[in-house]
Image (cartoon, rainbow, N blue to C red; front, side, top):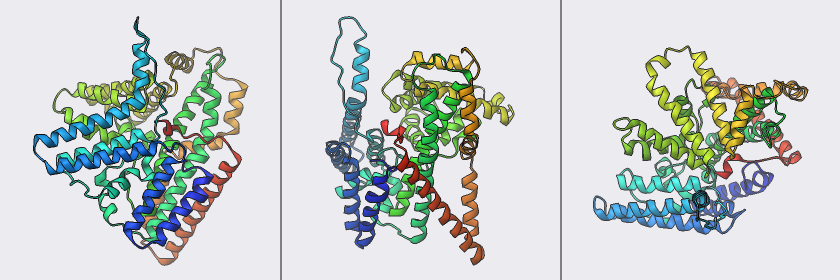
Length: 469
């Protein structure tokens, strides 16, 4: 089940909300959330609920022992045991096929390649449970004494499938006590509707272009068609993933949780370093706090540390060489920007922005194509290695969708953020202005939901890209 589906929008979510708010007792509210979260997770693959619950119980138990034996070798043992088991389970499901396939390249090795169905969300909840255990070991938090509350944290369906990566410290207070109010609920609906619109109206439409220009052989593809394809893929990725994050944050607010932001308009960046401070921010902060800084951070062996982080960032996204290359590609430009910082910062902003967009778009070619030969062939077409620059078909697609393309690019900027800031300021003004702005916001929510529902009803094309990670 995904958020952008009629089943979720009109059956699952309303039932969850009705039961949740009909019950005054927080303990029972938590039980309702756990039930619906496990049901949501089990909808497609019921067997993986067992893995999720077992993982939660293992880390909950080990964290209690770490807390009990804090400062001793026993605490270190339970920490290492947890990390090895969690990453081991994650690696078996996600990477065993990759490693064995690469071993089979060598002569006299012909091992059977395991074919596991990747448990949905395992990349995200593995990192979440690791942050909890490590933070307990570091003394940042105390171990949660009740398993039900820890299971609630790990299984919350709002962010379980594709983030944001929520640390226990982000929601520890809300697990014990939640502030439920009409303004918070209203803002949650608004945030959810914006995310739904991003996903259904923009990302899905961009996906149609991507399927046309980035599927199959590059033979016959024009240079303008290749650029249109990769730009649309860049737009699809952003609105697909940031839309899901917005929906997760909005759902959290409806139920009384505050989740961290995950995107901050990355396409307005002027460097790859800045881009990654704005894109999938909770993943970046995870690697910074739990990998980069423990390795030495900026104090020693900086470039080794950057190499490891970006290798892991790419590999986390997928068990294939194209993801590793994509991660190291980003890491390389971050290293180059670091080396050339005094000179780089003197370059006019407009040129740095163009540079960033060029690097990001080319990088996403590797993200898109598992076959590296196809990726390099596509890049060749981008830079003129094709029979023609454009075609009637490409020109017609651009002219027929020019207003939609302009809108999608415009929404990559902080336009909506400025509108939201204006709304916040208006709510501190005269009563008539408050009423006017709230009516406008309510109308916008209804328009987004109606348009999104219409798209979902009349269109079977509804992929969710980060569901695969």
